[in-house]
Image (cartoon, rainbow, N blue to C red):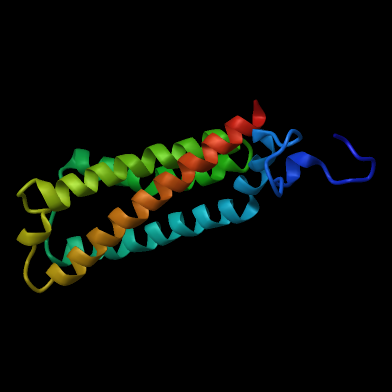
Length: 163
């Protein structure tokens, strides 16, 4: 029901389900400025943790192959930032880019830091650097999972809202 002068029902959630309540009423609170700010904060925190983790890599003399370095620079560092920039004009596309790159970063990090028994595994890093390396590897996994989930939710809510 439309009431003259009343706020649009698309911008508020119904108090109780009823005949006037539709699934479209819940989209505006899901796709809020706070959600975008939260995602931005997690992506920037991830960037900071990545920088510290890079210092631990250098200190522990854990070198990456050229292909792994390219993946780190393009997907793990630049990808989420590019997604945030794209979100300013194409919210769903930018959020999908953040979700995809953070998912790729999460898989790369978990496999290399916790699964494959190589020089990049947290248990095989030089003892003096192991605490910082392990802590930052865990924090990277946490922020990557959080950002991927938040970005996916944002992208889905935005694309659902647009339809």
